[in-house]
Length: 182
Ligand code: IMP
Ligand code: MG
Image 1: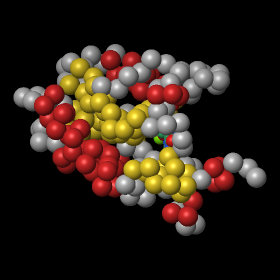
Image 2: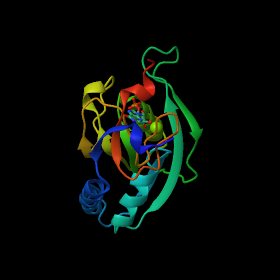
Image 3: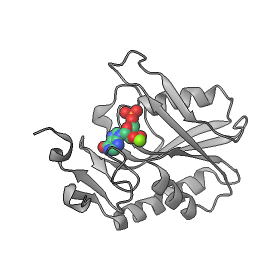
């Protein structure tokens, strides 16, 4: 499969992403000055963003990983969160930064934030690389975001379609023909 051939257009080049990541890292360094947050990578989509972001940050931190999925509207278990891999760090009394790839309906982070808050962290902030506000089903406003994008299905830089395309170095709009039956 030729990944590049299935991309309609490049939305964000690796250079554009890198520049924005630097800006976000500087903002987050300011926010966490004098503190030592637990920075959480939401697997798998956030892995590239997370790795680049934390290397641009000068704040001392702990890192941890979590894998979750949510059942959105229309499913029987609406709004419920499935934790596939939990944290190993105890976040009680700690400042928590959640690093997400993209916020779409908002269900995943809405439920995740609620769940993490039951563990009594000192604070919870969210940074997302991409935000699709048009698609929101629940109130979820990330404190920090890289880019606000239109309602288009994007892949690359960690984001997948059926587990493919995560290793593309840029973010591109997937051709509709790839996921629509002809
Ligand atoms: P939400 O709960 O609807 O906000 O879901 C967010 C999750 O949906 C993300 O972590 C992605 O895994 C997935 N997602 C939403 N939009 C896209 C997209 O355009 N490309 C790839 N994955 C997406
Ligand atoms: Mg995902």
